Image (cartoon, rainbow, N blue to C red):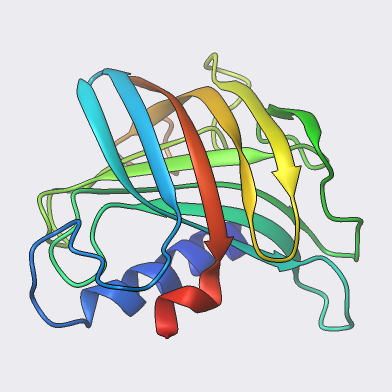
Length: 190
């Protein structure tokens, strides 16, 4: 499941890193949703950007997920991207309005945050999916409304940063708190 999360995040990165080079936050005429959040810890500040969701919770391919994807650049350099998702090897019901734990456990949501200067080098990665027994991470996702065309709500979670996801060498923490209105990921392609 954790590999699926990294594959989806990498796929999203490929989509917007191959675009032409307009400035970040220049989203054009399409509806790319919206996210506004505050980040504290190793990185400090406030930011806004685009918000998407993908819902593949049924079918027969064996890779099932519900994922919220947040980013600040569509056609230009990005400085952050993060996801909140639920990943399983079997079909499951999509989430309804309500409050959900973010803790990286198999039946709950997990979160990952990446910060960069718009390049593939020098990226700081934070997650609740690795070394979860050693560090305090996690939080809460509140879905206030959900439909086939929009998901809205709030989130507040802490994730830990590692220099290598295999050795659990802790670099620090960031906490993200914000609100969102996410639209289908397909909107990014139209």
